[in-house]
Structures are given as C-alpha cells and as structure tokens.
Amino acid sequence: MTNEDRASLIAFARRLALIARGETIHRWQQGAAAEDKGGGRDFDPVTDADREAERSMRAAIEAAFPDHGIEGEEFPDRPANGPLTWSLDPVDGTRSFTCGLPNWVTLIGLLEEGRPVLGVIDAPCLDELYWGAGGESGFRRSGDGGDGGRGGGEEAPLRTSGRTRLSEARFSTTDPYLFQGAEREAFERLRAEVRTTRYGHDGYGYARLAAGTIDLVIESLLKPHDYNALIPVVRAAGGVIGDWRGGEDFAAGKVIAAATPELFDQAVARMRDAA
Image (cartoon, rainbow, N blue to C red; front, top):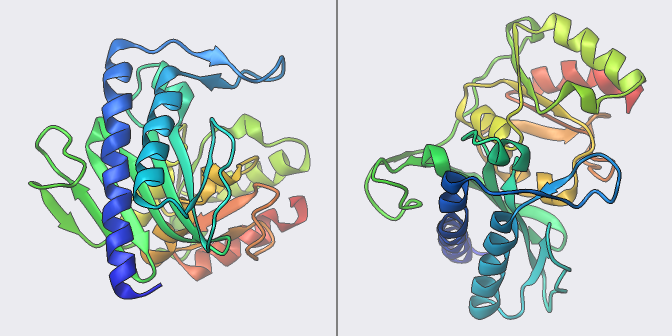
C-alpha cells in the first residue's frame, strides 16, 4: 500500500465513522431496545443501531470499493476480490449503548492479506475519533456537534504514556467475569499489582491507551471484529498489542495491549500460563 493509498483509505474510513454516527447516535439518544442473539446462552444484545450502521457502512464500501471484502458483526462476510478487506463492528459496547452510557464505540478496520493495517475507533457520544495506520496516528475531538472529523476542533498524533512498570499502570478490562478458572486467578494476581483498575470500556479502553491515559488492557473472548481495528491504532501510537503468550496469534481472543514493550512483557509473564 502506497502512502497515497493509505491517506485515501484513512479518509474513507473516517467517512465510514461519520456514516455510522448517522445511524447510531440518535437511536442511543432515544433509547434503543435490544434483542438477544445469544441463542439461549449468555445474553448477547443487538439493536437496530448495530444493524443499520453496519448496513450503511457496507453500502458505502460496496459503492466505493467493489473489490474489497467486508467482514462485519451483524451480516455474512463478503469475500474480497483482492488483498483488502474491511472489518466492521458498528457498536462495540452494545451493553453500554442500551444502558444509555456514552463510552461505546464504532470499530472500523482494514486488513491487507488478512493483516490489520488501518484502524478507526470512533466514540460518537464523546465526539472523539482515533485512527492509526502504519506509523501515522491521530485524535480529533471536533467540538462542533459530531462532524466525524470533517472540520473544526483540534487534531493531534496519538502517543501512549510510556509507563513501564505494573506498579504504576492504569489498567482496564471490559468485564472481570469474562475470566474463568486459571484465567481469573492470573487476572486477580495482576490486578493486585497495578495502580488502578477500571471496568466496562470495551474498545474505548484501547483508544485511551493509545491516547496515553490508560497503560494496560487485557481481555479474553474477543472476536476478530472486536480487535482488528484496535491493533493498528495501538501500534501507530507506539504501544504494543499481542496475545497472552507474547505473540500475535489472536485466534483465541486473548489480547494484551500495553503502553510499552516493558509493560507488555510484564503482563505476558503474569498471563502466559493461563493462555
């Protein structure tokens, strides 16, 4: 991918975030009802906002890039006729969304030959947009009612905090009850070592790690649409993201993101045996 291609695709991904806002934010304001798509297992909510935002983003991709593949949370995959595939999670944090909380996000990733190369994390209610691709990253809070980064506001590069010690780390995970058995034991040991712990932020936790206000995120049971967009954003901001064994095999959904390699290695040392 050339630099010119990257710039064009970043602009398009940011436009997709704006398109998704057009379907999500008014439904959040009105209070969207959730259906259970879990099939009798744990409650797995989905709303019209999830479906309509993904439908609208898919239509935009199909019109602009008919050869690109699309993998989303709510609809069947569309195979690529080439190296590029979009990964869409229209509402990451649907539980927060249905509770009227503002920290849900839209995740938009681009994969080249299966490898995440571009990511956008958009927080519509907070009017914050984060993006990363290669060595480039950016953050915008437009401050003019949610323009999705088209104008107004300020934009700056993302940069992780640089913290290197667990004892200083601000740690986040979506839900401690997603860790079971040996995972839970390892999680609790690590939690006892960090400076502070916050729960319930889903993809927004990774955005704040990239922005330098959270230092460590550890999660289990993530799916590709949960992490594909996060990987380029964290790495472009100078952070490290990998699996619990210290590699890059995300298939098991066990993810560690850290502000620095030193902090990542310490977290891997605590979680590796539970991987």
